[in-house]
Length: 156
Image 1: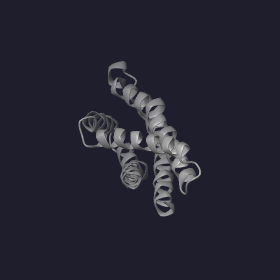
Image 2: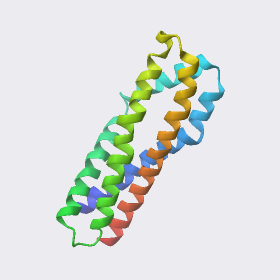
Image 3: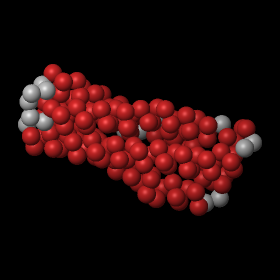
Image 4: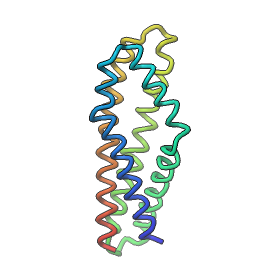
């Protein structure tokens, strides 16, 4: 069961890292280069659609599995791979899930209401900078966690 959970989590974290990398690497830059209204509309459409996509079960499932692995690591502390499981689980839950809830989601909500507030240009520029910065954190956290879980698989 532990191996299965590590595999699921490693693959899930890898998929999340890839998605976040794409946004950090080129999607946000491309959206920032097109006409203001089109960029905002595109990002709002992405944010709306992603809630009804396979991303959500992967997002929550990988977070839950990472938290379980961190807890199991504490229970199995003397066993090989436990420190890697704890590190990976904590990095993912804080660096991906926590950052998403504290930074990216509120920024998404602000962007969604920007047109109604009449301050779309200023909101869009702040959004591009801040959202992408915090997305970099999610990319790194997901990548580190994927690496930790793969290393833990090799250790067990």
